Length: 356
Image 1 (spheres, rainbow, N blue to C red):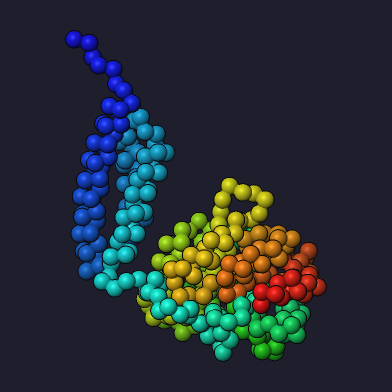
Image 2 (cartoon, rainbow, N blue to C red):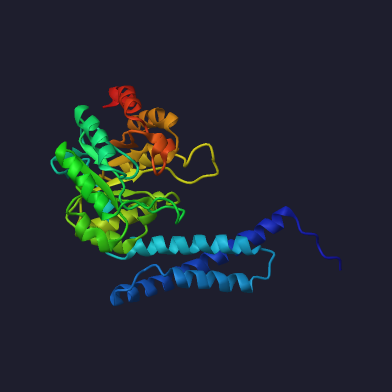
């Protein structure tokens, strides 16, 4: 008897049955994940175990007999693991995530008597890196004269290359604080290591968590009890859910003074340093009460786009802009191409004046 040739309809019916079987298996897996979660919570263990995840993927790739490629196996199971982790995070406690608990009113974060949130958008400006007191003083004098309140500068610089300028460290933080005090400005600077946090918070009014540190959960927990407002930057490859979960670490540890920051995400585009995700501003506003600012300098990586990107961010509802300013960008020790000179900065402010 001749075998009946497969048709599109019969192949689709077989796929539908397999989909149902996969659904049953995934639900069985989720039930087991819930059991593991309960045991981890009881024992005080981290929900996410990257070592075990990597071992599981390696084992599955080794057992793969095709026709799925190893790359496809890895991608499919990474998505399964990511969904499982999200499920665990959302069900680890009986209460709803604090970051998503909306009061109906936008939250205002007080940074030493300067509000960030409702009202006039703020401008956080300063050099990419703290380099010298002379340069800082020139920037600070300009900011104060223009009525701005926030001076930023990186003293600890996590760089892609180990040979690039890494910052002045704690002496740079102290220099930043001295200059800001002379001009009655609020200090914004990045922390990269929990060990330096106790000393850093003595000098910094708004502690920045850089994009590379967004996944440093130990640091986030410690910042939750550090007694300072926190500016949490989105990692360049993070989903919005991952950003919200990072903020949850801060909120659940007791720090309600959290400002989120969109700074561009990594895409295939090479014309800019990153791709500014304007939709992130709208999503933060839709799902949380937290203020959100936009770092246009790190998004663009080039000074000619800072004005239109700032206008777009403010039009979308951002509570502020972070922009890099340097007295002599050509001589800057890091990221000179994305920093505005002082005269250019004044013209930039004129260009966004209608939004402020």
